[in-house]
Each structure stands twice: as C-alpha cells, then as structure tokens.
Amino acid sequence: MKIFAFLLALPISILANFSLRASADSTAGIILSTKCQGAYNINIWQNYTNGELLYRTTSANGNLSLNKGTSQATEGVRVYKFRNGIYEYWVWDGTLDNPQSGTLEVYKNNRILMKQACRKS
Image (cartoon, rainbow, N blue to C red):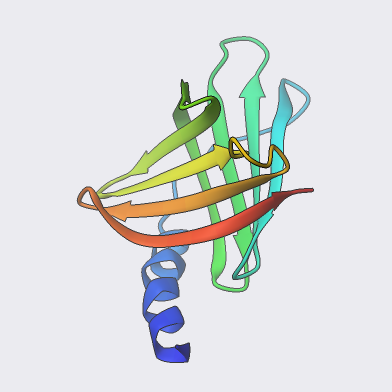
C-alpha cells in the first residue's frame, strides 16, 4: 500500500514543481475549501472581475496552482475541473448522501490515476 501511495504521489509532486502560476488575492473569493486523505488541502477561488476559477492545493508532496477551471452541476453536486498538460484535476463539492464530503480525482490522459475522499473545512 505504501508503494502504491508513493507511485500516485510522485506525478503530483513532479507537477507541483512545474505548476502554472495563478494568483488569488483580494480580487478573488474562496468558494470551496476541503481537506482530502493523503493530506491534500484544496482551495477553489473565483475571480470577482472575470469569474475565472483558480485551484490551489498544498501537500507534503508539493503545492499546485492552476487557473482557468470550469464548474458544472453533475448528478446533483458541483464538480470543478482544472487541466495541467495531460493531467486533469476534478474536485467534487459534496455527494448526494453527504454535502460535507467530496472527492479529489486526478486523471492522466483521461484515465483515473488517483481518487481521494475529502471533507469540507
């Protein structure tokens, strides 16, 4: 299990070092803050001026900052999607059964690489 977790964390830690810069400051407001298993702290921000969605995650494996996300309601819950090259990050804001929980999904070339349970903070 530890080897599996390491293999999943490795691409994220590599990506964190080559992340795109996006800024969240007084021109943006936080719309979702969640903590996921594997010690990922995720914040989704929305720019007040242009509505752009920003993704910030911090973890022991590194930090990742992305912009130009999308948001859609799917199966009764909201999902935020961000792309970084061949990787895509989906953050589910709640579940039908529990609005305080959620999920982080990481895809590589449209194949799921990692799925972590999250809890709103």
